[in-house]
Length: 324
Image 1 (cartoon, one colour):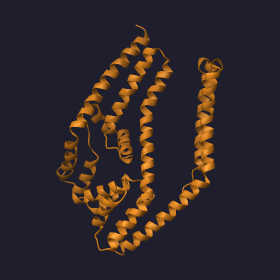
Image 2 (cartoon, helix red, strand yellow; image 1 turned 180 degrees about the horizontal axis):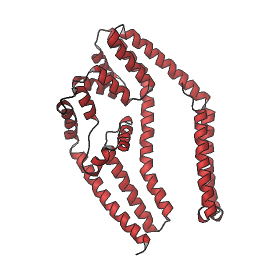
Image 3 (cartoon, one colour; image 1 turned 30 degrees about the vertical axis):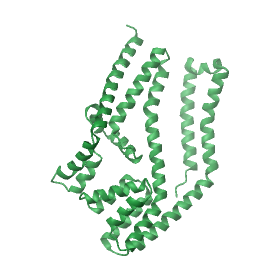
Image 4 (cartoon, one colour; image 1 turned 120 degrees about the vertical axis):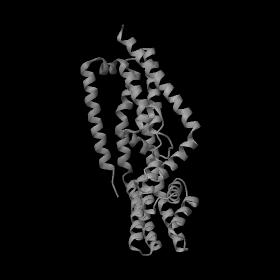
């Protein structure tokens, strides 16, 4: 049997298996979302009685494991990192389930391209793109969400300070931010108050907030609150100073971003220009660029060029990226 037919049969088998798994997971998530939320909270309060309830609940909130292949993938370290990316982007979904879904889409696309008769490197490139691009989108959405929460943090800190100055306790002040603050930071503070109401200590809930929002300004806020609870002092005045410090840092970051705009634009132009020029030449004169993948020397030149371009792009990004 020809190797091409073996490849087609393998892709057909993988496509059918992954599609069946994906359909079952979508049905399971749609019909058991409420039960899973209740199970998360009950498992945090009832399981592992030898350890503190607060730590059990914090682990149980993010430990929803679907069944089947997605459940087995969920226990892997790499998939746990993808789960953190989803949580950072504000997407309430299972990383294992989404990984199986993207794998099914990738295999189906590769099967269709193989039936059309495209070369193997086109199949592999398309399959890898379908696997990687959704997670790149998730990572970008997470970065934008973190940047938005960082810009909303001074207002939230000042609201907590005003609530404390009015005589409210810290949990009540956090609840006020969750109910009156802007999204998405209001949802994170609402989660803190929900954890405290379910028996999690304020220290553990604040530390979990710093882990969910890996931003330096949030860590400053959490450290200040934890130190004040141990040593005492005027927390409202301390939060006012932190809010003012965060605003000054953000102004400085925006100024640096404006001054480095020309360098960042140069990075984008120099990164896109070779690929755009190659695409134009391929359309105008295909024979001129066909040697790059038909001749062994041309393929070696492409590999070396891509490696050197990747190194140059990374170096330029390091030059224009200024940490404040």
